[in-house]
Length: 163
Image 1: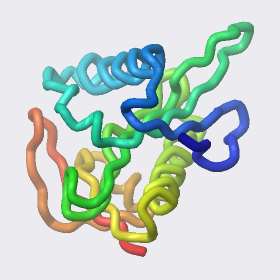
Image 2 (image 1 turned 45 degrees about the horizontal axis):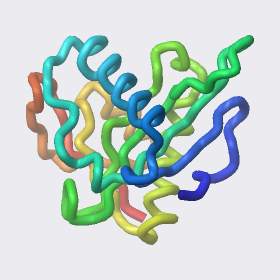
Image 3 (image 1 turned 45 degrees about the vertical axis):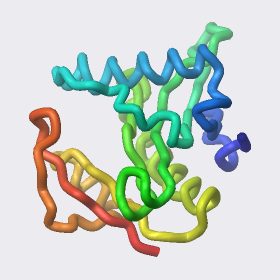
Image 4 (image 1 turned 90 degrees about the horizontal axis):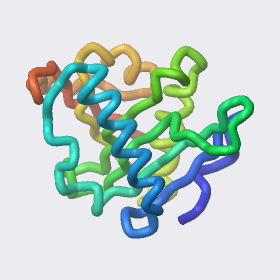
């Protein structure tokens, strides 16, 4: 699949369908999701939810100093309307712990929104955001829809981005 826009300094961006992921990319994204959502957030849940094959995967990779191998440092799943919500959606938004504090998460969200529109046209995007990240997503135009819920023991909110 095509690149997801111009490269952020030191980060290369790629969009991939499930079938076009390499074994190494699949392993890296599942490893990062486990590191953040299971270990770091101390939340035992079934990350592999049967939806990965319906998603387009947005991956940001970076080479560590003195290392030839690229490391996955940012990731999100993108879904067309009708898969997770009536609207298009973005989920499993992650930046690796080593890459945090440099604004990469904001770049990831902006690229995810832009990629949804490039793939499926300008349209609303609904997310299930962890409640503690409401302010973060609000900075990107997502609005709390007043539909709180608990998922895997973590407070969440449905938030909507409108064009």
